[in-house]
Image (cartoon, rainbow, N blue to C red; front, side):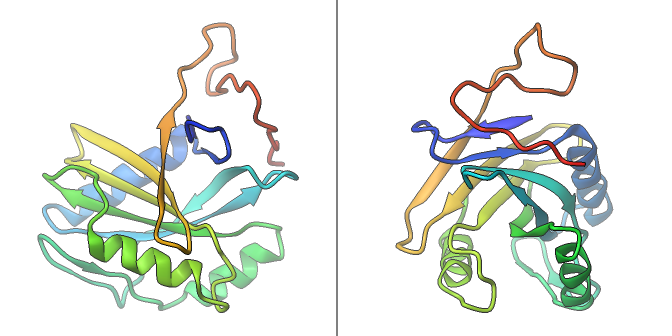
Length: 178
């Protein structure tokens, strides 16, 4: 599935396999929030990110019905291993159980810290939020800018002539992943 900003400056492609992985993670979390990181690649123009991996919550994460603190255990090793494959940290995902996928002020503040952090080296991180429950959920994807602007990405309609799983993109350079 492809998500794009209205001005087509930003785009994110996430395939059904990664969506199913996320649904599995939120099913395991039951009624608690959960989350992890998003890893993938950018195209040459850096206007489209392709998600190659969504991680479960690290084992040192903490959560409740209305809050989540992502842990860090094992993430640096994973990021280093993925970096060698030219896959990079793209951002964060988390689950708002039985609530809309709207970013909270806490969510935005966290992403702004990431955008402004030299350690993350990700000035325009992606925030993917799943709201609802494993049976009926909504996904919202946004790019959070260092100045606190939130750029919402909207799902692209599938081209009926396109091959299954491939979104039709006009004006966005695609990168195929090996």
